Length: 252
Image 1 (cartoon, helix red, strand yellow):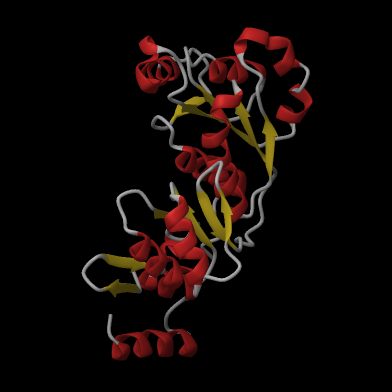
Image 2 (cartoon, one colour; image 1 turned 45 degrees about the horizontal axis):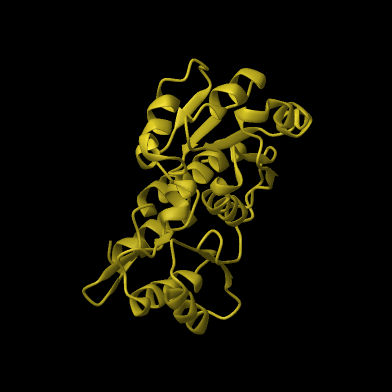
């Protein structure tokens, strides 16, 4: 869409011959911005999906991550995942006010202001699962959704989970992380009538196969309210649960 077409569309909205909803639909795919030959930054992703483009730092140089972060932060909230300390230093030099969390390996600045229907619980079986849970927490906070942490409540000591059931009940959705045999999402799903996003982690001994055992267990859950993301995908789990908490955007 060039400037002439954009001006024509906006003129039709002003004259009342096109609705605001029609204009939004036309503009959803724009704009994007090319950064050399290494990136094409999507500035309208929040309009389409409810969340700005998020930077996966893995596989990128520190300079590339910093360049992309500078462009995204100029237009809205910023979230970078799976960052190394070197990448974090480069981003913090490029974007002032960015917060670095070495546990979740995330960088962030700002947050969205869309209303949420309630908080999202982030639950994990053991302390070894905390880093991937904190990635989900960072995602929720950038989305403007309150996280409720319920950590180290695995199936080897279910009394710990039952003691915090009231916290689970006040959440509108739950991210539940576990390694080993990956049983915790099924247990939580059987306790509360809320959507549960199972988050398998790579924590466990040899036969856990780097999280594959937990992934398969969660996919075979007998609790019908459990759905599952990929191994270690804290961002995806947090994003999905955050959308559940916010509900459908007004397309009016």
